[in-house]
Structure formats: C-alpha cells, structure tokens
Length: 550
Image (tube, rainbow, N blue to C red; front, side, top):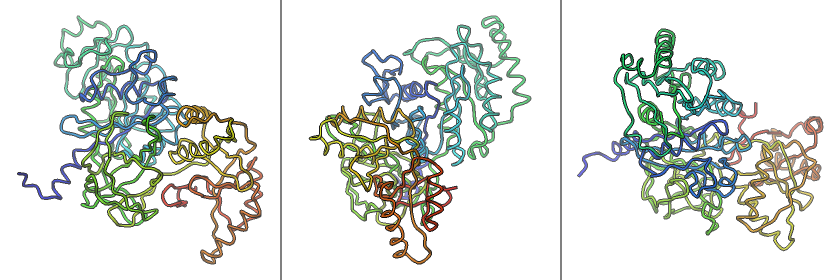
C-alpha cells in the first residue's frame, strides 16, 4: 500500500516524464536514430532503417503508404517507451521543409529537442529553420552528430559551425576517434572511458567494448594516429570549451554534443542517458486565462495534431493531445472548451507509431491519442470543466495555391469529406471561395499537394485533378471598428460582400482574402482601413494573436 498523498504521487509521475522531438534536415538520419532509441529502450526488437525500402521491414515511425514508397517522413509520429524509470514520449518530425507546419506544431508539445546533424553536411537550411522555432520557445536542445562511419567534416570545424550558425555554446560530451573507415569509436568525456566502434546494424549494444580512462597507453598502439589526433583535440577542448551549465542548457543557450552512427547503433546510448539526466520534466503551460502548472490535480490538455486514417481499414481520426496538467483516467468526463461539448473517451491510446495500446491513465507531459469523428480540432483545449484556451499553435498563411476538382462528378461528396478531414489534420489548408464551387488548396510546398492527391486516391478512393491557381497571397481577415462587436460584424460582412470574388472560408470558417500579387493586397488594405489582415492564425478559438502578427 503506497503512503503517497495524491499530489505527491502526481508530482512523482510528472517528474518521471521526458517529452522531446527529434529535428533535422531531410536525410540526416533522424528516423533511423528514432528506431535505435526505441531499440535501446527495448520497445522494438529489430530496428528498421529508412533506406531499406524494398524490404518488408520499414521504419516503425514511417507508417503511411507514401512514406514507405518515398523513404521520407511526411507526418510526425509519436512513440512512448520506458527507460531507466523514466517514461519517454518521443516525437519524430518530418524533415522535409514542405511539412514544416506539422513540425512547428509538434514543437509546441515538447519540453526538449534532439537535433540530428549529418557530419558530412554540417548545419543545413531546414535545421536552421527548426532551430529558430526552438529558440523562440527557449526549448533545450541536445545535438547528435551522425554518420561518423563515413568521410565527414573535421569535428572541430563542425563544432565551430554549429556555434556560429545556431548562436549557441556547444559542450562536447563525447568525442570521435577517427572517421569513415578509420572510425574507432567515441571518447566519453564525462565518464572518462572509450566505447570502441564495431559496425553492424542489428548488433547488440550491450556487448560494446568499453576501455577505461582517456589516456590509456594501449589506445595509441591500437588506434594509432587517429587516437593521437583525438587526444590533441580533447586537450584543446578542455582548455577552450565552456563547462556544461544546466541552467544555460535549459534556457536554450547551450547544447551538449554527441557523436555516433545511428545506422550502426553506435553512440545512441549516451544520447538516451543524457536525455534522461538532463532534459527537463514537463513545465508550466500558458493559457489565455492563466498559467497552468503540470502538478495541478485537475486534467487539462491541448490537441496539437490530428491524423486521419492511421488505420486504413477504419476511416479513423486520432487527435494527439499533450497532457498539460493533472491525471487522465479512461472514461473521465472532459469538456471541449471551444464547443462546450462533453467527451467521455473510453478508447484512448498510447503509441508505438502505428502499434497502439489502450491506455488507462496518463500524466502531465504524456502524449495520448483520442479517436474522434470531427468533434476535436487542432488547438482544442480539453479540461475537467474550467474554461481555458492554450495558445501558441499557429497556422501560417499558405505560399502556394492550387484548385482541385474531382475526375468523377459522382464522387464530389467523397472529395469534400476527404479534404475536410485532411484540412482538420493540418496536412493542407482548404478554402471554399464565396463565389464559386471549385475548392482551393493552400500549402507551404509542392510536395504537400502530391501527398494530398495520393492520400485522396488511396484513403478515400477519389481521383482528384490538382490544377494551377491564379492566387499567390492569402491573409485572414478580422475587423476592428472600435464601435463594438455588432459594428465589427457589419463592416466585415460589407468587406466580404464587396470582395466576394477574392474571399474564401477556411476549415474553421475563418474568412480569408486571396489575391494574385502583393501590391493588390496593399491596395485593399488602403481601401479598407478598419479591416485587419493576418499572416498567422491561432488554432485555439480563432484567436489572432497580436504578438504573432509582427
């Protein structure tokens, strides 16, 4: 019989949680690293590599048909595992820039990030972009330099590049001995030992050879000039590199750095241990009304992602929810704050990518999946009754537009249903023009349109024609007359009626103006001084946050 009071038991569970995302440029080895982390924790027995696409074994985190065909991750996956008495919620994000919105939303649900860098390419554009998001939220970052078993950049040059490009202090926790065919292993600078490299994708990491001390004379004989070079670099680092400061790391100003080869399952254990030791447990979350602490007894959570058709046999939709506070129990009564509707979720699931397990309880920091049929939207807050709205989950105005028509007119209904679901999921933005029947799709990159066409055909049985559109720029519109809500509504209606040829409604009926050129937008802004034009829209309750509009 436990003697813990409810609050101390809750605090204990919250302190055990680590929730982090893996971010990188495409092809840096992020999904492979995810697999190996799962392998280490004992969550999966055989790790699937992304490259082995012809084999029947695909990466656990890449479950969607198109991902298996192309060998890239296009949707974020969620995995939960236990390691060293910690419950780890791991989110794998798409590296491809066309899916950066999905990644942005995932980064709002985590407490730390693991950045994977390809040692041959260094810091790449998408890494910079994702890092800006992390920096804006002061998310602590750990860095894993991957592919040391290939010919790569000099480790000191890489370290300098990361510091310069990312504007963060780098503190090496491990250091490589050699590279490519001469890669002998990594020195663990904290434990003062060397882990010797031996290749092999599915080898058991427990049999790694560990050598004690950093200046063992046997090293020089065995590893020759690669060891001598590494030794010289470590001496240099000891003098020049700053000491690790946990407060600086938690503020997102310092990053611990690790070296290894994910495909060979090497150097991964050190990363996992560091995540458990260094990454923060769940912290407070800002809602419009107040700050919510994770140890509060009452349950609150926010939907940061909706995924349609995770199980192609059942047209299901799963809402991914980050638990912000309290203790979730299956069958409890929850209120959807936006609509006021009550939910009693009985089939809540935790994930190992596509494999799901029914869940009886969850705590602050956990990511849970609630099957839903259109009741939940992105940005929805669920509580035990209190009216709260969590913020920080934006939609960006699309940069590319296409019109979409159905090849078979009899399937118009399926097309609309499919696009509605994909729009709610955030995979694409769907606009219904006020004047006209042809739906418009908005996206950040071309690949998004290809994925949507593929998913419409394979998941909804609809062949769609995706055609060019004349529109180039979109802005959401609200109205501030200063004369009260009724006057605002009248002015907004007057604007929509006067511009019906260029106004459309999005997935949540927010009015949007679409134009061909930026000067056209400036002219409209000048003619309608009381209308506000927004490049970003908050998911939660259609809030257009001023601080985001900058």
